[in-house]
Image 1 (tube, one colour):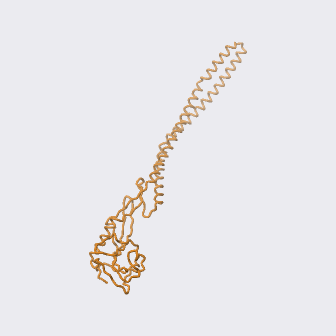
Image 2: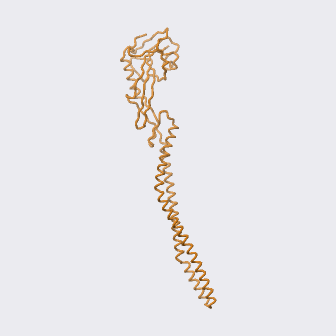
Length: 304
């Protein structure tokens, strides 16, 4: 085996590892070439999204050249069992251009890998800027949409409650005035009708009395016309009509207020429905302090 920098752990890739072919290896080969297997801890931290999420990035870099290119690494989900602590028998080694015997090479690999992840591996989450809601890691479109709709419903309910407080006293005042106007109109109308009956009986009595007393027909008819005029213009009838007119006006005001309230509620509902649908995405980036290489291994990979 060629010399490897003293601070770097050495392992042998198990040919049965499921990712061997994906990174350019050959499970049946007996020739081994150097690959770098890395495990990196990532912390996505965004205060305004109230988000702290820990993740892990695992990759295999092969083949190696003298220049480090972390973008060429293969992201794989490897298991500790995929890396054997001892060399299989009957293997030969092939050394490329990478200076695997120098610690500085692996230091550079680690640094370049961190820089690459900071630049290129943000975590994308859902975002609703109107509601100031952020998605959670792994949250589906359906679940985030449901959360937005629930939040929008709560905001709409709060606005409608304020609206109810605004209209409640106005409606109560008009309703009380309407009840009073209706009661007054009924009282006045009843009084006017009773007075009309009395006047009618009085007129009938006068006519009958005049007839019996021998008054002329023309004079009795004139008295009847005057009595009818007094009955039509009696104060009670006019006041009842005025009270009924006021009641009708108050009822119209209440109806208009209800229509206004309905329009305001519809506007609130439409506004928050639109807000719930305002869904986009937000990238939570990484800082260098959020990225730590926890494992960097020189692994001998079977290659054709």
